[in-house]
Length: 311
Image (cartoon, rainbow, N blue to C red; front, side, top):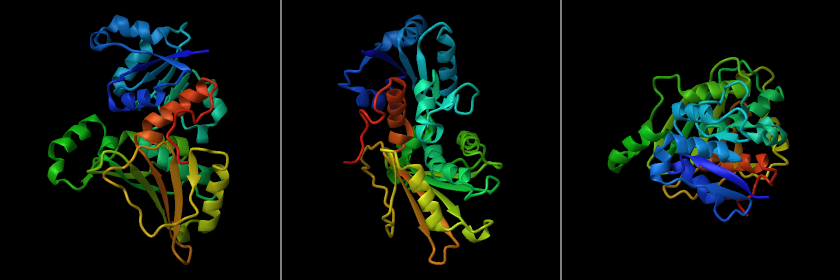
């Protein structure tokens, strides 16, 4: 049976990429509004309440308003790609590898994870759960993304002057909205220290968590960390733990779109230091690909349908 999908904010980057992944999908019928209809509140409200699934690709305040437009008696199920509900009560966090596929498939309200938190949580949360890393450790996160991962305002600034710009560090005022999400869903005592940056590439992302293993109680071995991650993601077609440890990691200016995520554990020869690294597409598993994966689960379909995966 065909199910209807309304992408509210379909003309933005995330919305366009979701729409592209749903093209030629016979399982879904897209509710599409023209420009004038998108500006009309009554028409949007009607579309939100008529859809089986509404995917919100909106700024936080607009996403909250959109949720308020949906009647309580409506059958509409929601995937919010904004950061408005990522730590909200009654919302299911849409990282099925961590939250559980059944939890996502049965949820009415699903909050799509942020791109940076997706990499951080995929690396850290399983290791904290297994007791290999302490929940009260002062974690730090060093991350670099294509500039589309920096939000609408930063994208605009970057595109204005990127001709002579090679690197832009941001979040220097602390309190980045991703931090609460990382702390909550990894079960951490302390908020991680988050150091994001963007480069003159449109997409692509590396997220790194450095670990002084020799200073951590019990000194967990790099092999134990890697084995734990490999076991945790053994049944995932989207997340894989690499056995191949390259001498360097590259992020290309013309990075190709993909919806998988690769995890790596680098370590010093004596095992006292490690660098956990996640490689993903901030617009793939970090945004649009994740939304489609969640939509598939909620619709009772194979979670990988329509995703851009290797092989």
